[in-house]
Image (cartoon, rainbow, N blue to C red; front, side, top):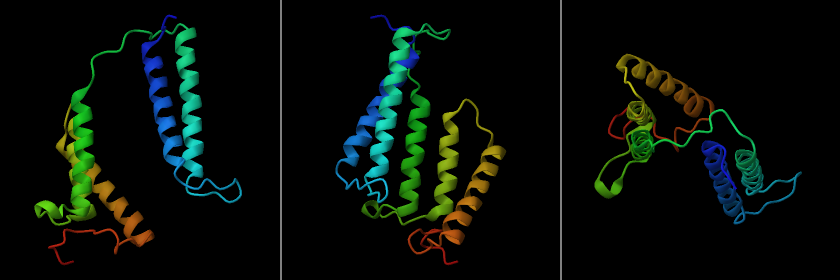
Length: 164
């Protein structure tokens, strides 16, 4: 069988892989019923939907000729590395790394670090725009998690050595 759109084919496989992973992970939790959902209900439904969507996309890529059916280009390593690094640094800033003596830096520092590192994944870096984005994200996160959800005991806002 001939693949008519490599992008759609591999996207479909990715969706199916993620869907099967969600279904497998949900099997370890009680599912419950529609009226009384357990913690595994949503991941199970999400996994089934992702798997079906992936199967449809994969099937379409094998049957329907598309305009953009060209081959997949080279793998984009730079965005992958920066996005993963940004998330790891955010987690380390939020909770600290006691094994190496890094204290928790808090939500605000974590969001600024996340935004600045992730913005390097793109083609261009504009300091003013990234600073504005980080500031807006920090304010909105503070409003959502600290003011509205009142998670200040579970979620440090500022570095542990700063007394606010």
